[in-house]
Length: 101
Image 1: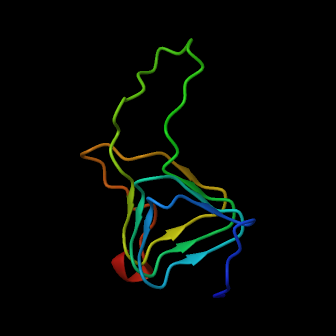
Image 2: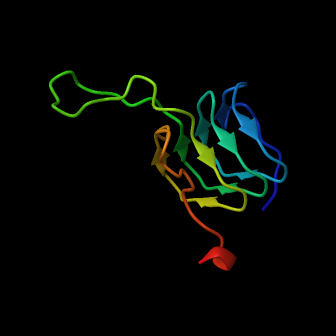
Image 3: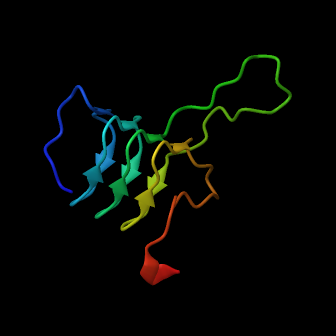
């Protein structure tokens, strides 16, 4: 379902890069530095590239510079998915196409 987006529905940072033919659902948030490949479908409510947060009392280390999130071409990002930035050695393809399975 391709459709025209309005600013009230989605929050896409100007520093995010979206490939050709990307389809966005309702209320998608994409943070700076995220790269979305060609033909990616991002379903309703997804949040991509949000910096990690901590309450201050956690023992879990939060990386200072986790690196950019790259969503591979043809991927499908599920509804309400929250994907933090990827580390330098982490593949950040959220989902694969049927042909790649």
